[in-house]
Image 1 (cartoon, rainbow, N blue to C red):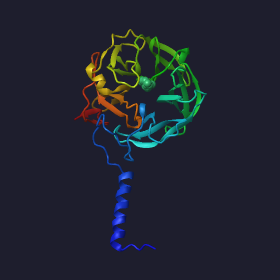
Image 2 (cartoon, rainbow, N blue to C red):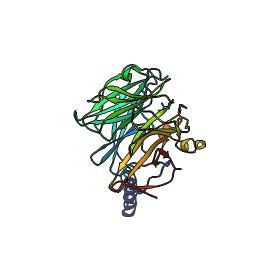
Image 3 (cartoon, protein in one colour):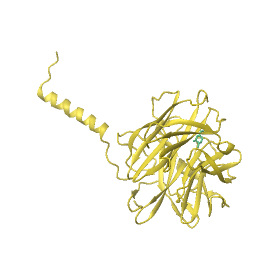
Length: 331
Ligand code: DGJ
């Protein structure tokens, strides 16, 4: 039998405590650090790629593609995190752990999950891009849950309004109406209103004849701003924006949101998030920096955009602070 003396025991205890603290209590973050590793409450890099955000009361839920190492390669996973300040995120769980729901075959695809909360049915309705490995199915899937971080049950998949649909984006207008943005190759991207229970895509608002992925929309001071990327797979490209007074259009010409030579600082749009506070409103650009060969290390570029009077500009990434109560950004 090995006998430990008192000093050794104490040393081992301190080491065990340090290991535990490091795992269990990651340091509270005090600023956003776009492009860097983003630790969650466990100190692990957030895995919520191609994601969407749903706000319930004062809590934000971030859903995205779970791409950590060691996943079952037959399954696809959607993660869920929660936060009150958009910066410190608690990992809730993988709310989707799905096996190929309707025979898409090996290498099937579940991407860009987005959750809409329906206050009438009290259901959390998740849309996602469902495809086969060559992206020919081009459909959306729906899974639902009674809780934001519950186990989502697959309901059905379909082509919205009969159209091809690859990348999807979510948009909830100020009046609470929910829309799906989806890429319909070769026509462009479409904005369509969801049905009352959100279980269907009901009415097309507009087809924007621009080939764009990662579509996102925000309604700001009477104008709609739509952004998206070009179609270059996982490689970044210059993302662009257009504006319109109504979702039906007409939409302006598309213009770069950042210096084109930076390829949107290596990122691709996934959402425009409006943070309304007591003193102001900040619009955050939420983008993914994909690392296709090491997807678990893909990063995020979240930055406040300069926006107004029909102009939208994404400044170069740098650390910033956002006061969630006032809605104001400081450096
Ligand atoms: C670009 C899309 O935006 C991503 O979500 C993903 O589908 C890749 N293409 C796949 O190449």
